[in-house]
Length: 90
Picture 1: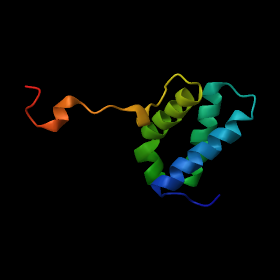
Picture 2: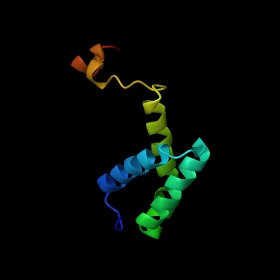
Picture 3: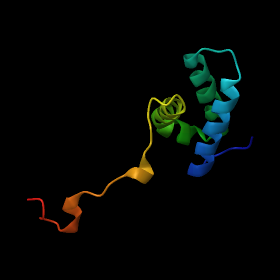
Picture 4: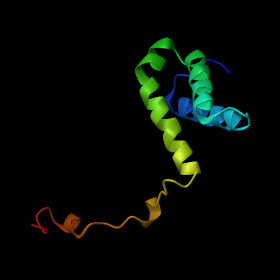
């Protein structure tokens, strides 16, 4: 893979690396380390240093979603009755 620094490309790369890591027999921590090591090579050093904590959060979040620990109900969100008027709930 070539150097990746665009936000969408980084996210896509994380997902691809997670799929590759999932096919290994490594532990979860080792899989995350493998993904982070490969990201460190693929993105610029400045990008990696700045966003490494966010990359870890993204990886953990995607793992939680894939395990159904977190269920996204984006299409079932309900509007608050307070939205009708700024002070209607006061």
